[in-house]
Length: 368
Image (cartoon, rainbow, N blue to C red; front, side):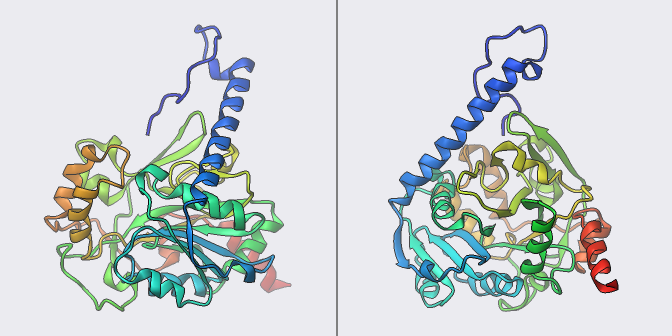
């Protein structure tokens, strides 16, 4: 991710920061509007390539909470994924399958609350699937609360197991908050990555019990003002010599959608730019979530071998070849500072997600 401006600078005096001038601000606003329109047009074009496998979108109610995802060979995780988000209160799933050969499309078509599409195109060329999701978000997401996640990401937030998305989104609507951000928290086993530590049908937090409590660091990146959070286990183990290459860990998974919105880099950032201001990363006291990331299940070995040939998950795959090669060796990620996952309150106490206002609102309701 570049820290410098992505576009040519306007013709203003170089003796001062051009972004702070009126001309510079107008130029950035203009360019960002056109960038957003470009993403929307890409979505419209990509939508033509989607082939409906099971289109049940006619049953979506006006107040339905929706979940969007792109998958490929996620059959082993899909039951847990659907169960988690159903428990949270998702009413309908809109899922794009990108060439699965493990039975995932058939499984999805059998689910009464799932609409599924096939997209046989190139994942990387569609902005890692975001063009396909842009098409669906434009068609079906407008004015709905939308959860946009990967199949190995399990959203939680303070008191999530007692207070579902319906209550959470009502709270956000009542305060004019358009969405919440989340830290993507990598969970991992204590032993080698190719060793299962619980049955395949056990909860994710039993199969992957450990995480890095920190350090995590955040910065604001112009011109979109998106946050860039890095750190955690992947920076510690795989990118300690090149930390600026470590994966981006902040996401915006829950948004009251408008058809004019567009995700830019996966769900790490959005346009218009003020949407990026809803989350500052770990330490932000405002209500936020955590995406429990189930990347490091034993299947990571075969997936890393496949990625070495497919080269679909990074803008510059060759730069990350060493990362995938190291994953194929099934390293041990656990170290003495690793924390065992105990629940959402632990993550609040560690500053990995905020929620003081949310907790206060619950107390206020109970005291009425």
